[in-house]
Image (cartoon, rainbow over all chains, first blue to last red; front, top):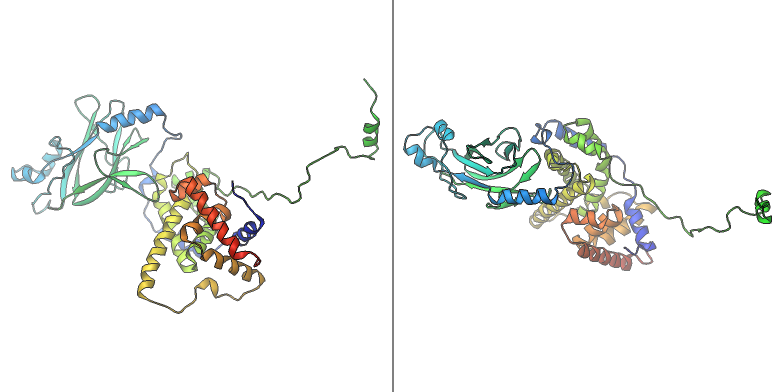
Length: 198
Length: 209
């Protein structure tokens, strides 16, 4: 507990003096917001209570088997496989390795990256990241033939991408096998993916 | 039933007080109302309600300006930090958890924005040296302003970490737990910062206010 002596209280009271409403500041803020596009947070949901220990452990267990997989688009393109076909039949797992982007003229700016998750309890898995405006509805993982497996392939541009998985619209999961990006303002980590330039 | 005692009869005749003793505080204990907003409002803003977001700005902007101004010592820099703060709040409300309190979440963003603006200004000032007084020192003084200037000057002499801790604790009335969320610093270190800030202010202001 603080020793709130009289002198400090008086100094604090002077500093605490009510400041009037600053109409210019309010107007500037609301004006700037007014012209801004709506963001992903309109659709976002969070659990109303902290995770239970059991839920946390299950998430950790799921995280241990979580991975993202990339494939070498350049190699596949050299074999003449069109991009659409690549997305329909993504190559499986080479965890944590960024593939070089394609050298094709029209698709030179994106590399298909496959994200996979194994979570037998999940009923719905979404991929959220800066590449889809953190939308929980834009990129849903498809269930695989093996129970509890989920995957999706996303064409990504070269550079740094921040992402996470959202399981059942509630649990925000990072990828334990990839570096984490911690936002100082919000205190929550996401995962980082670096896609190399062609 | 026994008849009323002599004292009870005296109380009834209003010759004696009904309560024999009471704690008489020598000074009224200041009780400040909660500084946080109705938790339903951030949730409505999070759901896309523009009116609720405007209510957040109305409720907090003056406090944010006060904190930013004392941290940065300049009205223009404070406005920049506060506007930037609310932009980030707007963009990232989806990351605000419904079971969390809004006030420390907001002040965490604000404290970081103040550090960013301060660092930007430090780099700018290393390139350009101006002879202008900061805006906060330019107004015509009256007795209250002189008092404020005295305290501000003392506050300005504190290291940034101590000033931040003092403002959050004694001016914004936040708990040490909230301060830990805002600053990312451990409770014991925060307590030490507040103590050192108080010691320094006491030494500087003794006999002045």
